[in-house]
Length: 235
Image (tube, helix red, strand yellow):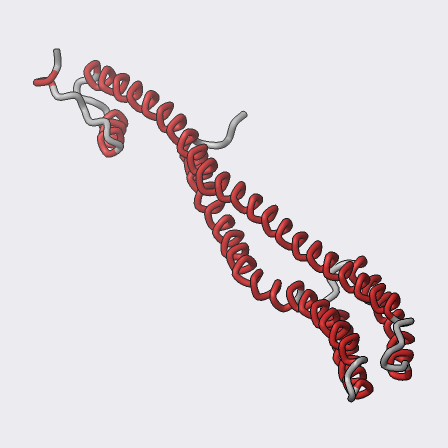
């Protein structure tokens, strides 16, 4: 046995839309907040890591150039300190295991190489292959940084598509579904009330005078928008 009245059903269906809209609004506000912070997060993390790798690359080039200068030892030491600082900066902005492994490889390869550079003669080219290998490792780190940035972009795009789907369902589909359900329930209610008006009218015409119950039902139907038919408009 169905204990739900049509009024209860109408109230329930009518309440679905605003509740869903509130939930969707909360989700969309959170999404907009996240998207608003995304550029800053990229700048503070992925872009900072990429800048660190570029700093390492620049330090290697300057170190290689400085070896042929009169103050070679000072130049090499300055660039070594800058290189180490860039490694520490890169470690603070690791976004993937690949980046972490490449940074540690660079740090391990650079330490003995820099020790050799400080003591090498200006014209000694025996360290050139190791410098090139270190440059190649830094280039691979830069590629890993680019991949990490692309992963963030891809994640943001996927999140955006999800939010679009939620917005379409919550802001368009659900309200229209509720509208269709309410239209169906009110259509059924309209037919039943119209039939009730016909029966009450027939009842009042048979009773003379009409009973109090018939009068009450007649008044209730009139209040609901189903007044007694006007005899002047009868066919």
